[in-house]
Image (cartoon, rainbow, N blue to C red; front, side, top):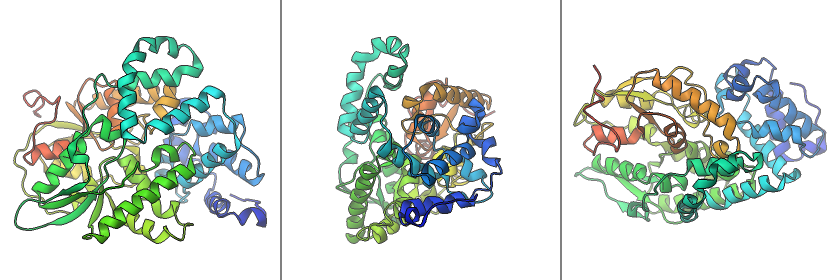
Amino acid sequence: MQTSFSLAQLADPHVAESEKILRKCVHCGFCTATCPTYVTLGNELDSPRGRIYLIKDMLENSRPADKEIVTHIDRCLSCLACMTTCPSGVNYMHLVDHARAHIQDTYKRPLLDRLTRALLAFVLPYPARFRAALKLAKLGKPFVGLFGNIPALRPMAAMLRLAPASVPPASPMASPGVHVGQGATKRGRVAILTGCAQAVLDPGINDTTISLLTRLGVEVVVPSGEACCGALVHHMGHEQAALASARQNVDAWTRAIAQGGLDAIVITASGCGTTIKDYGFMLRLDPAYADKAARVSALAKDITEYLAVLDLPEPVRKPGTIVAYHSACSMQHGQKITRQPKELLAKAGFVVREPREGHLCCGSAGTYNILQSEISAQLRDRKVRNIEATGASIVATGNIGCITQIASAAKMPVVHTIKLLDWAYGGPKPEGVDERLVAAE
């Protein structure tokens, strides 16, 4: 794609990076076939190619974002399916992140939209606040129908619908400390991301991960001073808040490295993993953090990535359960992890089936199912139909957002992949899974 940025514009490193990305686009349109919003809405401006044109026009002319640009950028899930499809290597992720930061800096949203986004940024990245908000949500549940009929209040209705009936207590295993590996031989030393939303909605995911890793002889460090990975605010264009979280985490993990070394930083929420693996890019312009951030990004591993390189023993049990594996967008498109989760499940004795249209997003996408609830619901229902068509009895996935989204409509239990692996390797049966009813024929 030909660009016409001035030398003065290109002096801005963010503009210069976006210009390089834009020049790689060859207008081929392959991305439109795999874009969930284009497939759902059929509007060229709701495809990656259409959004690239809008972003190019906005940045080249150094103009503030307008309502049209904001509408179509807001509808982007950042699922990154377009990057998997693109034959030219267009880094759409970095381009749309720049566009969102530009929107945040130059566009004044309607009051209720601003308040909703401010509320999400204030609550979701902080476990104590999020836990308190979910408990208060019970008071608002009776007003879901009313809020849903008022367009400006639909995000509030979506939040209330997604709020669980009960909130599990905080796990003591999330407190800073070291969990020593079992056995005479130490097989590794890793840090684990505590996280924010997942630590509130399902603290058992990290508890299970720590339990399985320590049984395998791996020492697990829960560092002090961790924060939210920054993804939630990053995707809303709050760039400085995202960078502050990234720096805080880099500091926490750098201390853990200095105190005994790390083989990996294990992440159990793939949405967080995609962002943490990008810390090196996000902090590239910060001389105090660039090298440290690059080191952290190199150490970041999804839990299935890490387990795949261990010499795992034979499973204690082989359930023979038919499992539909949902590959989160942040897993398959953001991190290019497609093989390891399925191979681990198969080795553990599960019968793995992949739903049709596995490349399409389930509609969760961080805060998307709140801010764009109507499109999100269409994508969720499409995903659930494809999952149910597999004939599986359980859904496995590696991202808390997908678990929450799919479980809101599916008739079968939706569990984190690590819980099924832990079950096969001697841990407890995941809650909601009935072993008597799910064995493969």
